[in-house]
Image 1: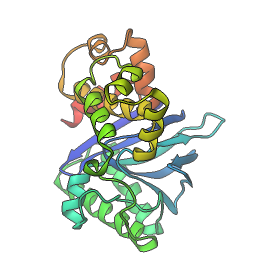
Image 2 (image 1 turned 180 degrees about the vertical axis):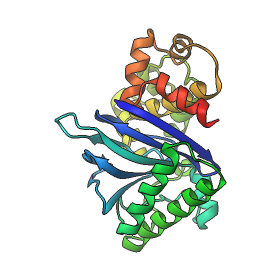
Image 3 (image 1 turned 45 degrees about the horizontal axis):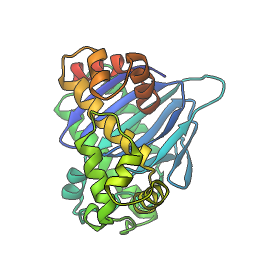
Image 4 (image 1 turned 180 degrees about the horizontal axis):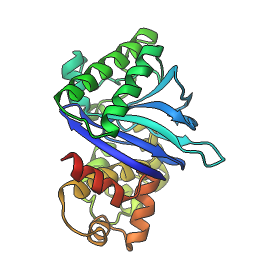
Length: 274
């Protein structure tokens, strides 16, 4: 789990600074994001079908709803990371990219030493709470530089299906998931609702989105959990119940496995950043 977290928000999305000492299970986010190693245990990320070993010369680029996991050092050492969670719509407008294209053609982003130093300096600013307009400017410039580095190695290409290109049964299933994100879900019933057997539904969903229905569903629940933790004053037990968890402990384990920090720590950081 993470021992500390700080958040800074802007039009681009948000950036987190984390000290992490446990693995991340396979998960996905609605946002695209970039992970930069700062020091300590770097570990290895699995992003889609790619393996990325983070370090001073390599960052990780992850597209919206792209499955990924992170295996850290087995000896329990803490790793420090800077994580950008980027609103795809902001990125498309800023970079002049056709909406729906993947932001990163490759999960591995080679970075020059000056980029790593810039990330360390930004981390130090955010870690001591100096997150003003200058920090926002530096964050957006750093995102631009990292996007340039990604494009210089392998230009972007239209390699994934846009939402309006998905099979109508997958679109219907996603709509059902979104409409019932605060309820328990039965994928047998979802498959039946879209006119497919469970095996056919799982195979078609994975073929179209590169995610299993379970991982996609968990991404939606995490998105809603983050929203409720940031904007709601309800106790954790209520947030857990709102998202279909039977106990606060189950929700805490789910959140920690996907975000690297317990929900109490995230809420504290989110309120500080608000």
